[in-house]
Image 1 (tube, protein in one colour):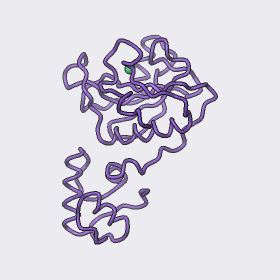
Image 2 (cartoon, protein in one colour):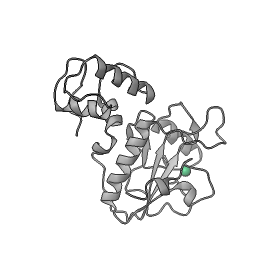
Image 3 (tube, helix red, strand yellow):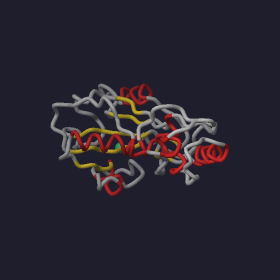
Image 4 (tube, rainbow, N blue to C red):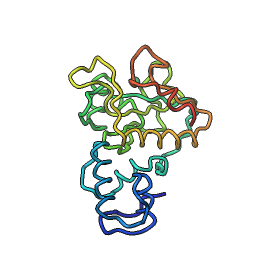
Length: 212
Ligand SMILES: [Zn+2]
């Protein structure tokens, strides 16, 4: 089911029923106090703003498989691999494409190394032009697309690995990888650590996404 409108106390309809089913409430299609309480509990559990209103973020976290990435640019480059990364930054801290771009340019690179960046709120951002080879996995940049989520390290220690993906990041990553696999059916999804000696992206991407 696609997100079509904000749902809150007093809303009625099939989409309210879908939310109620997802939250294990009685699906009568009427957004009342009990549904509102269940939405708030869900939001608190998933690190969302607790307002009892089902907006897009809450909807996407309830129905991650229903969302579809839009406007992904196609590339003429031959893509045989999609590589998942983390920014190796601390849990709970936000970083932008511009910030990563600055860090990478300081290393002498022409631009940000990754093609797609997923922020902690689950929003998807373009990095380097998809038509250009990235700089993200030594020896494997030609023929690959680099995808990164912001995070990957515990608070206070960027030398350690930790899967810090928020539910929103997981949902967007899954959606993006599904869409990329559709565009490049022969591309293999791997984590950076499957290619180079690194802990990045702090989880086993190859196993988690092998069914896509
Ligand atoms: Zn990496």
